[in-house]
Structure formats: C-alpha cells, structure tokens
Amino acid sequence: MTSSTSTWDQLEDYIRRVLRLGSVLVDVHLDVAIQEATYERQRLLGGLVMLAIGVGMLTTAGVLAEVASVAWVQSLGLSWLQAISAVAGGNLVLGLGFLGSARARLSGPVMTQTQARLARSIALLKAKDE
Image 1 (cartoon, rainbow, N blue to C red):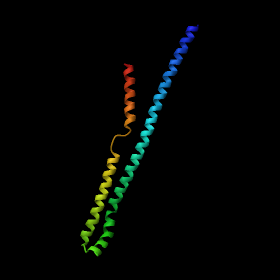
Image 2 (cartoon, helix red, strand yellow):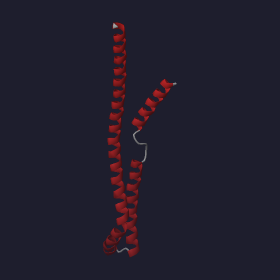
Image 3 (cartoon, one colour):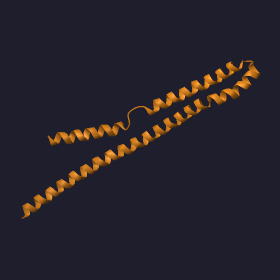
Image 4 (cartoon, rainbow, N blue to C red):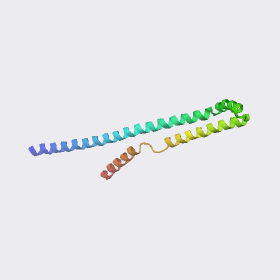
C-alpha cells in the first residue's frame, strides 16, 4: 500500500509542477502583452495627436490665408492672389508634414513580442503532440 500511495503522491506532485509551469508561462505571456499594450497605446495616442494637428492645420489653411493676406498686402504690397497662395502653401506643407509623421507613427506591426512568444508556444505544443 505504501508503494501505491507514493506513486499517487509522485503523480500528484508531477501534475502540480506541470500546472505551475503552465501558470508561469501564462503569467509571462500576460506580462509581455501588458507591456506591449501600454507601449502601443502610447504610440497610437501620439499618432492620433499628430493626425489631429495635421488635419487641423489643413482645415484652417483657408481661414488663416485670408487673415494673413490682408496683413501681407498692406505690408509687402503683394497682390491678393500672391498673399493667399503664400499662406495657404505654408500651411499645406506643415499639415502634410504632420500627416506624414502621424502615418509613420501609426504604421507598423502591433505587439510583435507577444505574437512571437505565442507562435513559439503553439509550435512547442504542436511538436509535443506529434
């Protein structure tokens, strides 16, 4: 009876170790996923702020061109068309610059470390099943 009890104890101990190992793996995956989610949130928020600035600058290009054209015409003697074109062109360049920065910040893979670890874990599980 002692040998069967010890066999059951060993089996129970083995099962507990396997469950602890699984728990550790899940904890590691969760920690990496949380870190990456935090980074991705900051990256996306920064990109959205840049996108909003770019869109705002492009939207206000027409209004600012009219206001600035009055000052330019009076101080520089430019024609109405030249003044409007200069201000609108400057705002267009700045707006496109912000939109380009936002696009660069928002593009790219998401949560790469988590995806890589998950792929490795699944590959290990599939390899042991075969």
